[in-house]
Length: 148
Image 1 (cartoon, rainbow, N blue to C red):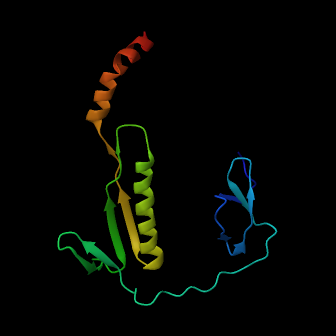
Image 2: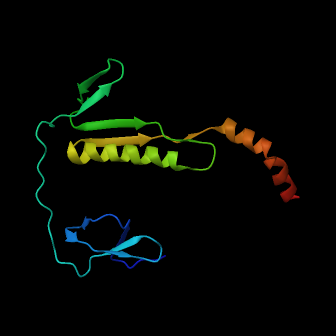
Image 3: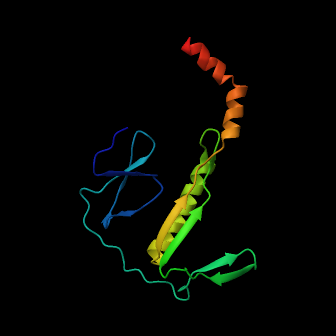
């Protein structure tokens, strides 16, 4: 389904402010809601204040079982390596969870704590599992038959 250029799709139970404009939800035939803000008056968000008592980032240290203040080794620069999914079958929601969780944490570090985050995630390709599945499914034989 194609939506007009100035329309954003969200779920119908949410009310949002989009780019400083108040939005109205309207049901679409796809079961989603579309937000059309072309005729809305400009509204601004109220100013945001940092909650008191939350000025530093603490991280749980599983070795000491304590919360420690997070102190980057290079000033405001944070380098972060995250283990990504191990790909040996079809994608599923578990794969999406790791992407979304780490992206939210990265955004908090950047936007809320003003860190310069360099984030890397690997994607592990397990050759043995893929090769074994190909053998079980006789893919080499099927490939050779198609080629002849």
